[in-house]
Length: 117
Length: 318
Image 1 (cartoon, each protein chain N blue to C red):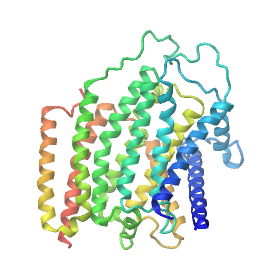
Image 2 (spheres, rainbow over the protein chains, first blue to last red):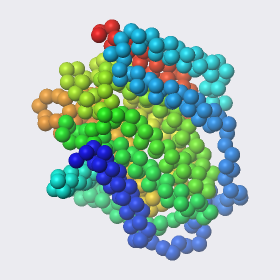
Image 3 (cartoon, rainbow over the protein chains, first blue to last red):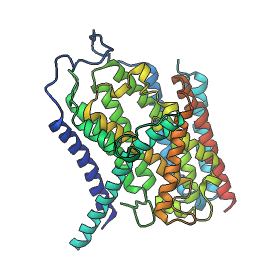
Image 4 (cartoon, chains in turn green, cyan):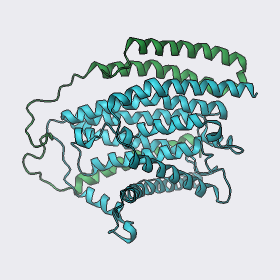
């Protein structure tokens, strides 16, 4: 059996079991609910307003930095597998690349974007 | 031909069932171990040594009220726990327990792992966002920021392993450790990996997304019944995955003396899991700003250093 077919069956099994668990729980779970149980939890208070969908800009900065560095790491992966075959050429090429990355990290650091304040 | 496919399906179902069984019993193991750390007994009433406890918990959760919070986005509210669980379970397809026992030995196994394990962020973020609760939203955002921050050093420490193994297939990575475990060549990598997966799985020193005393369990506040159960299964499956990966990448997988391969591998996995429990029982939770700056300012430079040093030594050694 080819590995992609096995993989597909395994994924189907995982998704199927998650769906089955949710369905069974819906069928056998107790109901109807008593009034007020479906109110968002607020330590006993009734919520005054809906949660604000806006979020702190800090989260946005982290997401941006993540995208920048994570894309670079995709290149590092391919390089890491073949670096022993590439020899010194691969080392020099990639160290220049990593140096640029670290310079970017240093810049972000000095700019204070790594501070959580 | 069809017999072969049938045999393959039976094998996959068997692997899947064993996996789910282990995940269920990890909850018991963790509760018992934590109890011993705190000098109490832990759950020991259901069956001998409490061995039927996971079953009882499961049945109880099935019969609980299946609530959906008012004004929640129903579709995503239901989808979130399923995404969490499926994304973690999918990773186990490439995890080998011995040379023969693996669902699919992909040549790009490590990339597949990283792709699926980072999908888990979607489950948590969706759960927080669709719950119509400010604590959940905050917990979900925190979780997403934490998980993506620790993913970069994690990926860097795995890249150093790839330099040594020269292959992304997990079976090949284990075969490359037949003489010497990578833990010896990669002590810093092992440490980085261990810390990062602790953060990725939201274990105690880094469990800021749950924080029961500030965020009332964060993204899962509004979840009840088996929807909540799915999140817990996902969490334990994620810890099991982390333990498996530490064993495969650094502790030689099934290489070693005395025991047959799959059993030796499982022994290593449970020892690593015990280490995770030990860490949970020992360390207090870190502050959120410390958590974020630790990843970006300490782990990430160390990760680059480790990768560059490994590559340099690998080329020097030929």
